[in-house]
Image (cartoon, rainbow, N blue to C red; front, top):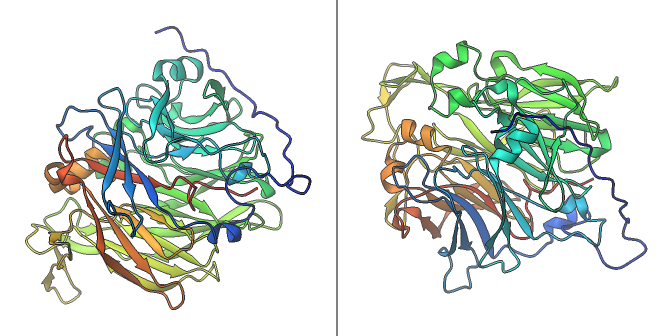
Length: 489
């Protein structure tokens, strides 16, 4: 490979209309509240993985029919395999979203699929929503040569027309090489977004809030550690993160690093409230199993506090004497009323009212899998020293496998979709059954008035029976946008 020459790039500048001078609008919705009244979802895209399962086939993007009136409801109706083996498709994002709503020339058409292990980025054309096709491959060699970046993760569209992708390390798996990749509207590599010398210690997720001129990113760990599975010693060795990083937006200058300490070990997903004037949000800290709220101070600095704490369980026959819930994903409803998060190891999905962001109130809780199911070697112990395990529900005659991992909410907030694969090497370590039987997808009915969660018995997508063998299903997207892809400016 040619020597790496790191290029840094500025975001494109594009003048947007405010919609008052013409009737045509750009993609998405003018406000989060307007999005709630958008059309009901009929299709859902999900990344499906064979990497690490022992099946030497390419990962693929599956299209799921989620229209109850359709004869193929709750079925995979299309599969788009990528051309290479061993990519580990993971998260996804759009080329254009509600951040571009003021630009009538912008179109939400291309889905961005970063490959966490290979470093390639696939661009998928969804002009035919039911049958997406591959449009372009951004090769990892080009990304490394121009930026030094590898292990791409979170992709967000920007109001400028550019696309920004967080990357978790360099090509050798060192966290010190992480940063943010900019692609232009034609999916060409522009360079790094952050200013020279302003890269974070670790990378993972990010969210930007333009009215506060701020972007905040999170920190999983060093790829050379997490790609091999979870080793608790690596936490002590400093190979996992506990910080969030506050950047100027769109300038790319690291302004503040917030050390979350032991209450914020492995901070993963991050979300601001959707209302763009709000200066608060949350980050899910997986290993500590805390939801940490961050907020802006009067002097424009940022602070944090624990908003929700999931108590660890005392266990036997496991890698640690206590089992954290392991909060691996969460989201916020478009009206900023409810937060939903999952405990991948404990196995429950939770619903909190966050109308008072400082004081979330638990309104719904549902178990859809666990490491502690009856018959498992792992046993929990209550405060009286009594052993206990859980019953795991069945849907359509199938006992649920693994634990809830990725979630996606309908625009109206009434349907929550759930998959159960985290990352192939972690799936193999914690839920080896997924290697043999694959993932499944659930739909949970949500009570948005009084609160409450219930499994929809009519919806169940079983990836055990896929044509090439059982696959691992991860992140989900709707063709028209959703509450984890769209950012309002």
